[in-house]
Length: 233
Picture: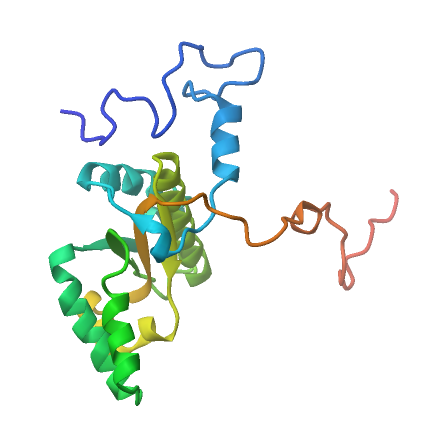
């Protein structure tokens, strides 16, 4: 039996097309996905805050589809340096207790503790993103493993977006607290962030203008030292 969560379905969020691969008009990707439609949808992905996320949450099948997409991140050595953990709704109270205990440790008053308990309940679905970075691998240094972990998260968020869900990645000082790390991680792992997911109750808004010219530039060699232009032969 095919273990793929997609089976014979078209790619996530994109209708099936009858266009053959290598279409001469350049509008269709090799797997039969309309390129312009897919690119336009991806370019519209923005984070959606928990207050704007409502039911329905993605079910297990949709979350597995998103994880299947996350596994397509570039992964030198196939180390799979990440995993995702679903925090069930019935587990939110336990998570709130952890948040509250951290707030107490940090000297928070009762109002701050109540806010932390409430934060654990936000969002219809909650996923913890965990990195498993293996040091000492010469061919796959730590920074490459971190790139894979971030790339997988991006593909996970993009897949959810294409299925019609909104999401927001939440991290910060609390994620690094030893109590939370111990609750989610095995030795050698790091809790990176929580992702809250649901159906957007309003359209996602861009937080600023994209400066493509800053992020996409031709190479202008600098600081080459003694590596100057080769002398003519």
